[in-house]
Image (cartoon, rainbow, N blue to C red; front, side, top):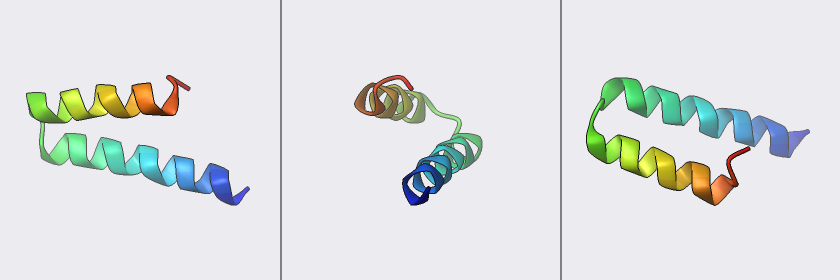
Length: 40
């Protein structure tokens, strides 16, 4: 339960950062995070 909440929080943070910094660097970081997570 706690792990799921952490995952959701991380997802919200990614979207939040993406909205603030709509940049190619963020997109690159995002894709690396998705690869690290495993695509979910």
